[in-house]
Image (tube, rainbow, N blue to C red; front, side, top):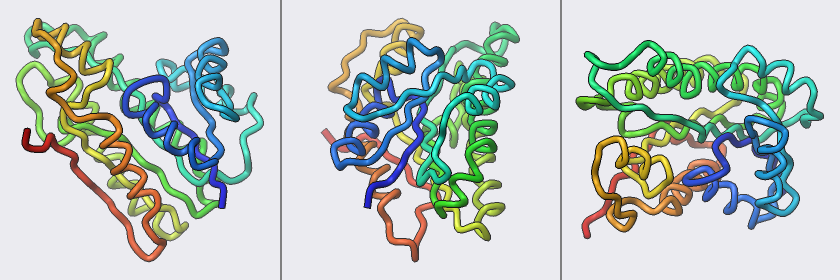
Length: 231
């Protein structure tokens, strides 16, 4: 049966790998872009996909953005794949670095979840958060990003308990370092050469995500970590 998925971060990396896999099996995709132009670009990536213009940098605007869109009454899955990163020691990070990462990585995810929950409840669907290994352990120079991802874990854990009575499943996936444009940006910030072959393929994370989504209704994967395998 065809399902409907609303996805953020579908323009590249893990989000794009997930979106392609779901499109290949004929599911309906609603892809969130920060502007009308970007939303249209995302929709053009995959046949039959629809673009929604909603800027995660401004969570207060999301309600109006979704209200202006003819979203379906039922949404089987909301997949939170978008994220930004800015590294630096606590002694040097400016407030903007904290605010930007907490806003996009956490607050926007909470607000988008709140706004789509009625449709997810109607489908007895699932909310899936693509988190990070930084959502479990914070390393030097990763404080702000890790704080946003630790917060995302807390959001998912609370939501899982709150929505169980509505038949909504909540899953968090914690990928280790994955060969994505974000990882390339991390290496740039770290001042290191980037070799994508040294990291997890986004397709491997997408395989994990689809396994969690396709699990029979009698079971739930609440949390799953994906780590680089032996080389």
